[in-house]
Amino acid sequence: SLGSITALATAAYNNEGCNDQKTAEKLLELLMMVPVPSSDEDLEGNSQYLFSPPVDAIPDEADDAESDEDSEASEEESDEDSSDDESESDGHEQGNVTREESGRPQKRRKLENRKFSFQRMRMFRREYQKAWLAVLRLDLPVGSLKQALHFLPKNVLSYVSHPLRFSDFFMQAYSDHELGVIGVLALDGLFLLMTEYGLEYPNFYKQLYKLVSAKVLYAKYRTRFFSLLNKCLIRNEMLPAYLVAAFIKRLCRCGLNAPPSAALFVLALVSNLLRKHPECNCLVQRKEGT
Image (cartoon, rainbow, N blue to C red; front, side):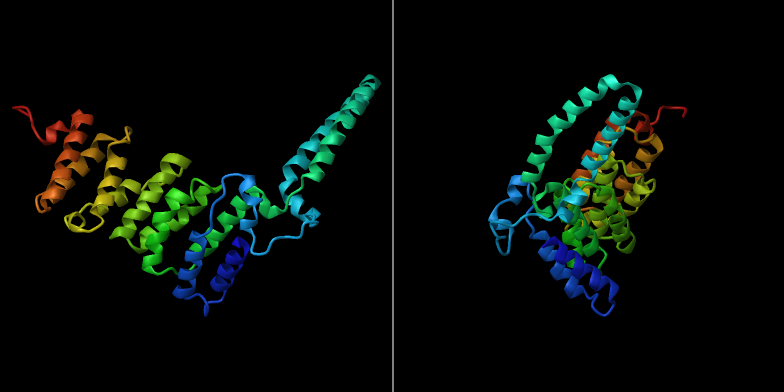
């Protein structure tokens, strides 16, 4: 279960002797195998249990305490409002009584439909996020780190309730492996957090500029790097002209020593950038007397 993975990862992180890469790799593999439900109904099937609970099992009040905090807070606010209304005038007493009577069947229905904490989507999302954050703190091997960076943007960030908590992991992964596919994957995740979830990372384009080199145009992961460049430079309409000009010059310089396939991409990307930013045309063609 997610709780067991979180506990094992926390114990391995606190105990330096157990914080080996093999343990981190196995925990990551287990976590990536956990199926993600889409609704509360998916959590009610027997396939979610190692052992099916007894038929007459009743959820404890502790299971409902955390999930019902918001509802209890709203009930307290409504009680305070009703008490204020009673103090203002006695004519509202009957209205308050009818409200309480109408609220009793709802509370009874709520007690009848109580579920275990692991049967609620909100609780599952929270435990899923805790498990991922606990595992990502471990010393992952390079292969597992690549898998995590590739898996998180598509399968985890859009599901958890606080995706910005994963920004430290992406930043740390890039700082430890600036060059190579890990740096590209880390910047890809950071770009998603910036565009979709409002992450502020001023040095993003500075770090992306460092990755542009003739060496990366020969790498196996150049297709993913080209995709990242296309998203960051073409889709972003708020880039200043000096930043676009810097990338154009760097790409053209690297394209001189690139293989034919990469050189074709560089030419297409530079052409699109010049069309989108006509103020940069002076890099290619200058008027006489300037």
